[in-house]
Length: 289
Ligand code: GUN
Image 1: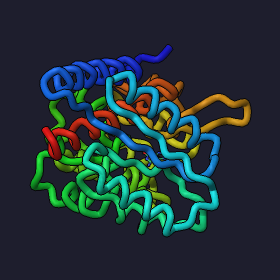
Image 2: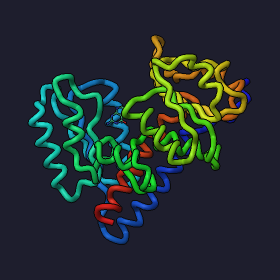
Image 3: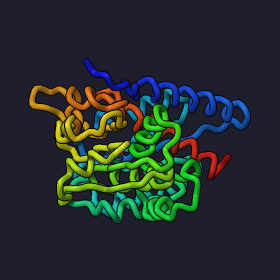
């Protein structure tokens, strides 16, 4: 039996989407305008198709204008950049997200650089990443990557006072590890970023009041690494050979020791799209609000 409190990402994400829907309805009533989210999918990666369909559906549910641009796998760099230029120039487009990973022949960094930073609802443009790293702007006003933002909202749901806590982030990716570390730092945590070359990872994790696991390896973080009472945010979404989804943390073990833990599925996963919608609303308000 898990002793840890379960952090219900599904419920917290649904509540956030409800708040966004209310705000969008208010904007529509007052101005006749609604935020527009445009998702660009190149090729037919099955997982990406599913994610894009969910983003489209949930954006409609909160009352936004939602458009998916499905481009063929052989789309050229020039054609993709032309599509982004068109979306950048269209005032009705508030948020642009290019679903990753892109087919190998495309230059992902150049594609992200081509998105108007004011419409970069993924928070991946170097200007947005730099603003976050600068630490001078309230993250609420920034376009911050969606999974890190969702992870922080889950963390704050159980730990309202983060200042001074030891946080260990396992993983240093551009999409999750680095931005989540910046957000924890902004919240006055003492932050360690661990990675594949970290020595004695177990000892590093044992110091942590907060563990954020973003490594992409099923069950990699063991229960005995967790400090009793720590809060564990599991960002991993790994598909096992039997088709089941599992996280980066050995859940049954960790739940015996942690104070609070996110399940997989039903933890961080549902927060990602809810935060994408929140970023789209943030971008709308900054551009046209
Ligand atoms: N693919 C998996 N996660 C993400 C994400 O957060 N943003 C984008 N653009 N692509 C993804």
